[in-house]
Length: 423
Image (tube, rainbow, N blue to C red; front, top):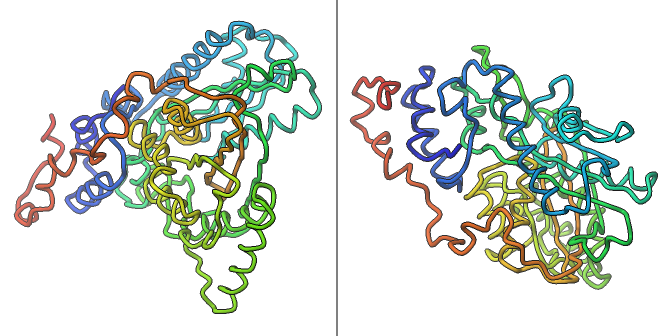
């Protein structure tokens, strides 16, 4: 269900734990979030049941997203039936019921008894890239196979109802969404395939306590469960990305570019200009020497800006991620594929092009994948009803226009029951 400005404000202002200071913080955050008016959230939240979600709410949200995307996938590829699927990987970080989500899919589509199923939980926003790695590993043992990867996130039971600022950020950024992808290592399907996996690099720095705790699920002092994002997050991202690029770069860039970068890095180190900021990680690195398109995880404007500056990307490069964030919000691990879909709908992807998918996940992880485009792509996909209007001339949302009065001085001296403003 669509979460527009008025609906969002109604949800926020019925939280009696919040005061003027928290409302001003939320206003500033959502105004600068890069999220538009067309994002979606679960029914129980719009219906006012975010404080006491039940199991049915969580399962209903998952069923609607997962089954909808799978139905569309099997319709698009009628030559592949559910009974032919050999491997099924589902990644949902914040919800792990029993029977599992993979079992719900097997039951719904009556898949065969020897299917290999895997549930990934707690892996964060880059979990779908981890799922691809799982499939890649299994393909080495299982030849001529089909694999499904289903990527989404559970919002229904995870709306934060407290007042800690570092935990309210997720309410501003995360929205409902998901996707399903079909993979195969059957060579005779090469003419039908759209992408080929070239390189995948995973980096995990969870041995660092600061990195492990920089984005973590816990209860606040009042007992409200939520997801805390700390100030160390950007430092952890910079460290993880640096380590990941050290492995990735030699695999994707030409030798001359690698030598040039090594020389520049040595000179910067000699001058003592090394920085731990995310924006400075790839200083002097020309990723465009080996990559044509960049699919940065649309987790928030700060992450998109940070990686963009780090890899010296321009607005054209960042447009798919910005538009995915604006149209769909942060859909966790599914976000990569909305950005990729934007590139395809805009007819940017040509045969032989290489795409870098880059993102971070709780734990703390940095995962990067490089794909090769196998044919010219022009499917409008999930963007088909709106792609002609993107990018919009103005991506500012209307929160400041409608609720800017919260910043007026007089509000500090007036007692207002915010919960009744939208009653």
